[in-house]
Image (cartoon, rainbow, N blue to C red; front, side, top):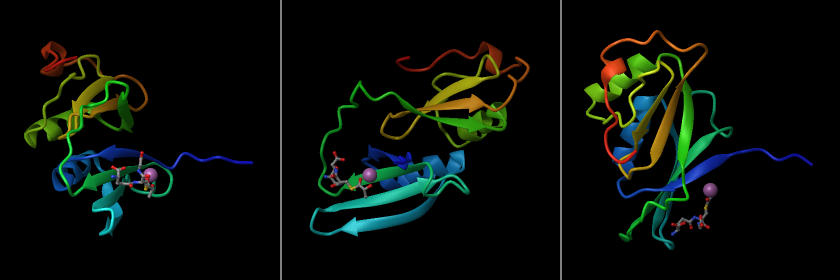
Length: 141
Ligand SMILES: C[C@@H](O)C(=O)SC[C@H](NC(=O)CC[C@H](N)C(=O)O)C(=O)NCC(=O)O
Ligand code: NI
């Protein structure tokens, strides 16, 4: 008997803004379904070559409902080739780097609905360097 991880589902209030956020990380939309009866849209995102392996499923309920952030949910984690270059790209796009990669290894950002996203440097830590080394955490951390 086998079991395979497929996806993590996030309920989102602004699907297009969330897709743009994940596009910045390198994920692309792979499929979407509208459900007229249930009044919701499902949008599946994946990194290149990871469709059906490790997807993010965005659920957009057409009727507004408050999402309280569910403190029991932690984060989604991604391994990246160059954490400094990615954080610079995110900052240039107006994304807050909530936990800067001061150690050349780990950073945290948040989706438009405040879901934590962990970014981890592939391989060895990068050399500690400015401006990252002296950047402070932003927001509740
Ligand atoms: C396609 C498959 O991967 C799903 O996850 S469908 C699961 C289904 N989703 C919905 O009904 C979306 C709309 C609903 N209002 C919601 O916000 O979940 C479902 O059973 N969802 C319930 C759940 O707890 O995930
Ligand atoms: Ni699902």
